[in-house]
Image (cartoon, rainbow, N blue to C red; front, side, top):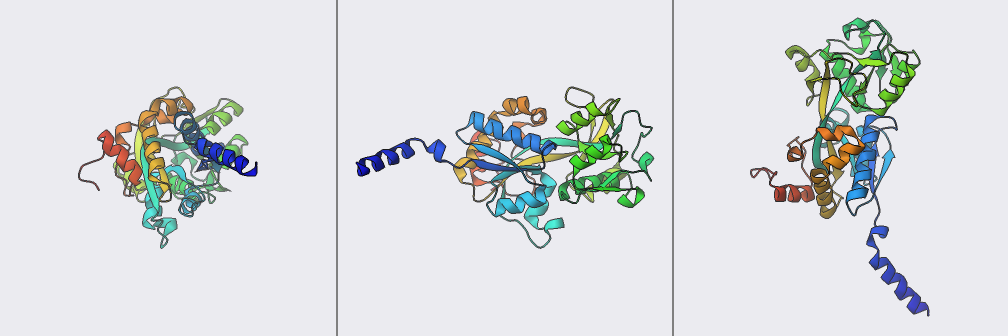
Length: 321
């Protein structure tokens, strides 16, 4: 009877591999951030459209998540291409410690950033905030800090130009704006937290135009080399964009570790290519990417499993290995 029971147990396990498979772990920024919302969307669509499972873990910025991917404590994340580039090549906060086991799965959409103020405030430009209380620091998230410093640089400003109020991350900065502790803070357009504070503040919030001439672009890229500018029009999901507004942009990419097996990476690349509509229904930012551009070169190697899928789809350049 014991042998028979053992045989039945072994057969049951063999017949249900999906239940035995460990879920993919997706590292994100804290709850309330755009990155966390995007991670949740990614995890849901992975579970809904593939035979893979995923769990989302709020953990911190890219400087915490990417070393954890290399250490096999996380499987993947959705991060800015500048952050991934610096980490892989051992630059900036990763100086002398390159994370060579990072691999791209796909380059997705551009995210949008600028500074928000109360809609009834007198501030029209970044320069209007000089000497005022604004959120600074962002020391719990190096990626967010880099973005904010690059936005200041675009305006020819530094943290010393403000009566700075240190915050650990953008979520705290948004809370401080809602509570009247600061006059402005940086946040991604389309984030749930912006909708939250917009509902709390009488009159709501609005984004400021980021300076966007050639000199501003040069100053910004000295801090965030893959950044760019875009003119956003008011529209659904763009809370705080109350008029045509210039914002900062940068690509998000799905990044994994070399420990991920080729078949899983292949399935993830396939999901990104085929399930844009499903992703966009959960998080509207995913509506912005072009599946044919998932294989764009961003200075970091792609996972072999993803390369195999993109070659099959005919979107992997013939002259790239």
